[in-house]
Image (cartoon, rainbow, N blue to C red; front, side, top):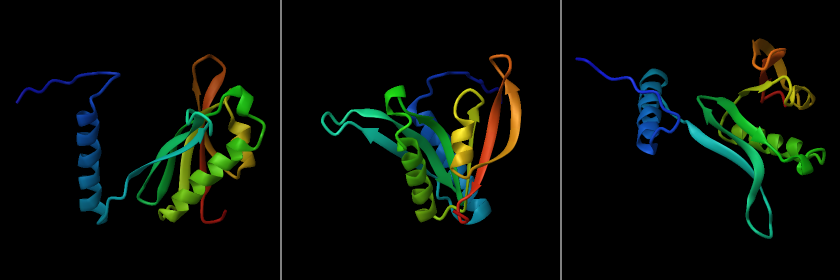
Length: 143
C-alpha cells in the first residue's frame, strides 16, 4: 500500500487526537495504564480574565513535561515565575509524577531553573550561532 506523508504546521484537532489516543493505547498495552493529561498554569488579569502568560505542558507515566513557559517583561522579577513553576510541580506530584523534564535556550532562563532546583543533564548547540538548548530534569519527590 502506498501512503502519503504530509508535513504541516497546522494539524487538525482530529489528527492530534488520533496521534494522542494512539499513543495512549500503546502505553496502555505496554505499561498497563495511560495517564497522559495536559497541564497549564495560567496568569490572568482579574479585571478582564485575559491570560497574560503562564506555563504549558503535560504529565504522563510518572513524568512532568514542561513545553512552554512565558511571562511578559513587566511581570518578571516578582517571584511570579517561581510560583507558576511550583504550582506545576505540585500538580504533577498530585498526578503521581516523580520527575520532570524541560528544555530552554541559553538566552532564555537557564539560571532560573537552576535556582528552582532543576539539574542540567545536557546541552546541544542551536541557532542563533553561539546559543544552545539546555536540558533539565528534576526529582519531584526530593522537593
